Image 1 (tube, rainbow, N blue to C red):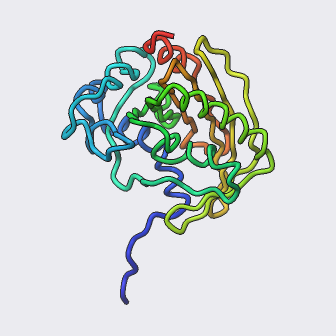
Image 2 (image 1 turned 180 degrees about the vertical axis):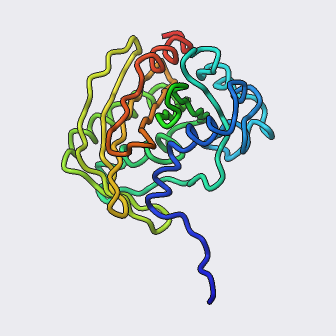
Length: 241
């Protein structure tokens, strides 16, 4: 029998967004954030290059590292099968929320670096953290666009990437206090192939740099895992906010 070519399913594509955190933490060590970790270096969302082949970015020095978080492991390896690209929303008003599940938080991001953060006590609880640089006006617009999307998309929307569709429902804003210039936080429940996945998001702005955090519990997909306040606070501190 002829085998079909292997293709990333909608559910698998969704999980790879946070699989960076779990995969590298299980395979690597606390020093992986300095060494590049298994599977390559930190992601450059706009260039498609790893730190093994690209010159270090100023963002590499600003994004959180294992030395900043005693109870967490921070890695920059990119696991095999990482789903790349930007999902397209069924509703244009919801595109900012769809972009948050892709390689880049928005098309206006000039550069993006990404890390995986896992709780040492339970590595299945993972946070994908990204720093992106913008023009000043674009950074502020990004935060306002997120707020507008949250207001418009409470009833849910669908995204499509490489022919795969993921539905998002139970979209609601959250209150996450920070010392950043601007903060938007929310939760969404993704549904793919009948599986529900509760996801938490936080975006914070410090001048023209935006940090985004996506968290879920890969062992208990419907339980949800709020982005740890300590992780957000440490990142904001490193940005000088």
